[in-house]
Length: 128
Image (cartoon, rainbow, N blue to C red; front, side, top):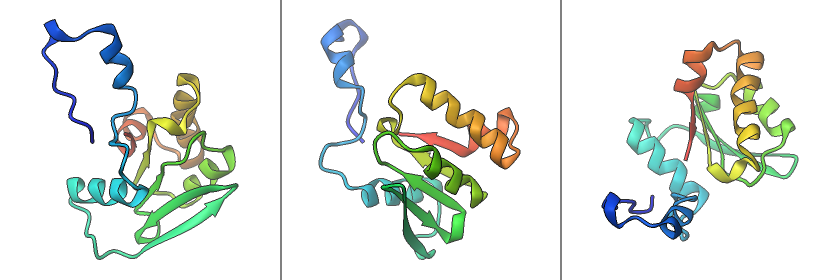
């Protein structure tokens, strides 16, 4: 993740636009995935596979215990496939969503597809 430590008095408007993407430019999808796994205490020895759905790459850890997608503008088909896996946790990158409305719709789709309530959906879906 990018270093985002600023003194509020020194923060300008141009600095805010630089913070849209919090991931360092040289990081791969697997860097992000393994970083999250380490942060959350998920065993790195768990099986990992990648599945492609409608041109989007889904990283599936331990047969769905954790599913991540870091591609731009995630598709409805990819979201449906993730929901079919009934994951414990889902990770998206901010770039997965073209608009804020798209991001909010993801939460509603998982409530519908997985039967999660409001509390569960906000605990289980993580956006980097």
